[in-house]
Image 1 (cartoon, rainbow, N blue to C red):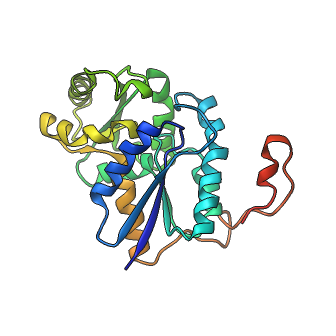
Image 2: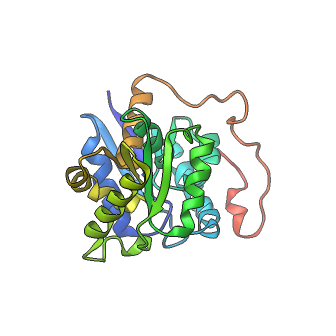
Length: 246
């Protein structure tokens, strides 16, 4: 079975997209093609509600392009899961965000998990998503490492700082697993698991495998109600290219 999965990095960082691509390919099954991309428009990184909102048009452009080229399913590779509902409206196949995938995966591996994200200001968003996905009873805490997204692969001490932050979070929350709260941490997952001695979940890998599994089971998002294709209408100004949905 040949499967095409498109992994969309909602920010415009080419370096992060390459990192995400490698993480997704590492778990892809034989016959699964992974395409990783980032939008031509949008924020360089997503570290605020403002950034997240402005990333969504670029995400939807990539989803629409994937639909035209026959992509089977999609991963949204940002821990805020920006534009997830809208992407599910556009896509024929399944769309999975990395926050939902990582949190749900963590519930299979222990009674509780803790989230370690980038900046303190993003902790509230993680809690919002835990509530949305129905896993607040499993989420024991949300912590940050205080490293901006674009510095994760620039700071030579990132692994040490993240290891210490995760260890502190595990101790504070008595957690059984760690969820990494940024796609830019994907390449550190194996080192962290080894150093910490508990399961450390990278949402890019988790979401890729979940999309792959849904496609294998011939399952896709229901199109009868809320996730039906959006009605065609005119959009103005900078959004004029969105006039006609698929």
